[in-house]
Image (cartoon, rainbow, N blue to C red; front, side, top):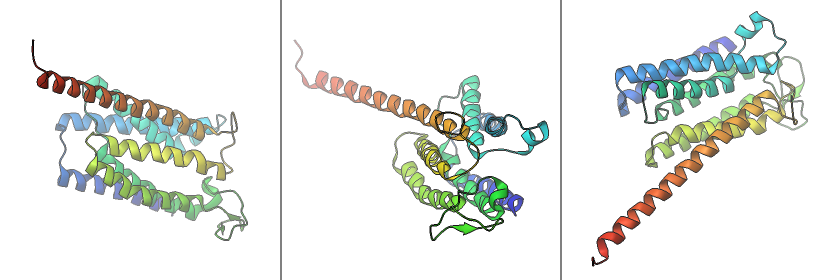
Amino acid sequence: MHFLFEALGYFAGISLYAWQRARHGDALSHESRATVLAGAALGALIGSRLLHWLCDPHLDLFSLFEGKTILGGLLGGLIGVELAKKRSGIERSTGDLLAEPLIVAIAVGRVGCFLLGPADHTAGLPTSLPWGIAIGDGVRRHPVALYEIAFLLMLLPLTRFVRARSRHEGDAFRVFLSSYLLFRLFVDFLKPDPAPIFGGLTSLQWACVAGLLYYGAVFTNDQRSAAVSVLRLRRLHLHDVLPED
């Protein structure tokens, strides 16, 4: 069931991406789009395995290539895209078309994680709360996968709203990934695996912190750029209305 829903998640995400690109168009050329997607795929492949290994450095080679993490895939894909864009001279943001497909793909895939229970190492800690669910081992646990699915379903209309209203390319993807990183930083306290490595945080949570610091710098830089643009417009306006000597 886990493999089935993971495959369905990939299929749903790719189908939604293709539909959105056909409907809304894509300003990138065919060559640029291929470069960006290749960078995303390679970065996601490396990042998902690397962060999985950081969760347990004692894993053997087979386990390393067998396991993967969504967080590592997202952050690795982000790095891969930025490196590919820099190498190819692509300056515009390219992530908005990927935000909603990624949300849908992750939500569908998490159904498989939920059905697998503790064997997936994503089940929550034991709880006495009335919504605790026992799967596999008879222990009522936080249904962390269901929490994540619910969060993603709420995030979907938000990213759609940002994409429709924002004047800046890439804002929808930035809102999606920064929101997801913040959610995972806190919800992972409800999971028994992996074990904390430093400061009470796991390697996955430290990856979230790194990603949030990156986006904090991005949003701060965008605000500064917007302020500079407004200041320049005001100076131009004053120059036009003030009488010349």
